[in-house]
Length: 71
Image 1 (cartoon, rainbow, N blue to C red):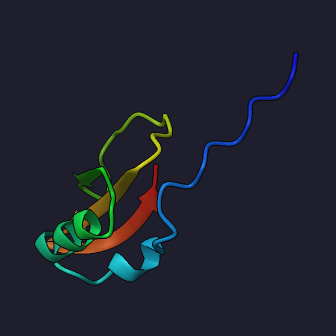
Image 2: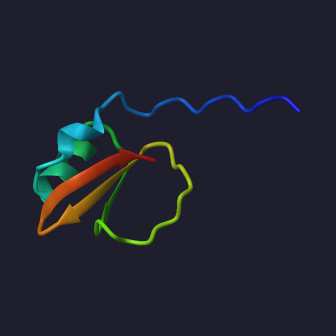
């Protein structure tokens, strides 16, 4: 069986730039930079692990982004 081609990276945006922002500011900036889906989560939230191209995940504690990753 042939290997599946890698999915194109939807955005060259660096997720680390969102850490420290308020959740509202991070979500607005992410959408302005082309992310089709922005998911806001609690840092200890139980989530599915499927990768979704175009999605940015924001772990938020006390209104501030503490972790951010693609997919």
